[in-house]
Length: 245
Image (cartoon, rainbow, N blue to C red; front, side, top):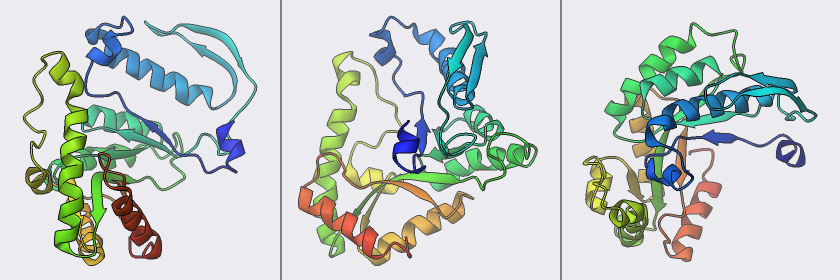
């Protein structure tokens, strides 16, 4: 319905999440999460084709479910899979989905290469008639100068980090060693990019090339409760220079 209300401009994102304890609050065992996620994803993709839905899974058996409404974009809206796992990337290719990965470009290339290899063997599935995208997930802050961008991004990242760690700390769960503990480490790991408009245009494009990704990235502009004025400046810069971004 939302795809119709928006004139066919919906893009859908699917992700399993990184902390199984979240689903534990709903009585779901951590060992069941990967299989449940796979089944739920397959049901979602099948349901958007309309008609009558039949699905026989270990967790979700569905029989003769009538589906009266289909998305305006057929067979379904552009779909993004957030993943750093090669098996999920391969699943994305068989369903005509795009992928978005976080991490250093050299690491992401280990995801994009299998994705491209499988993609070439599945030209008749999903939305394969449309170009697929491989995006990099980046937190981006644009400033009037490098120091201005840093002054906006560093404290915002600190707040984001505290929020991200909340359930980990609450349940005494160790945080992955790959998670940057400081803003400087986040920049070093290519999770964050902060600087002037010229720097922001250049740096992510270099990372995209190294990752063998499309000229496409998924950016977080409102980073960790950053100052609204700073968020608006970043957003306005993207809008005014969109042909370069």
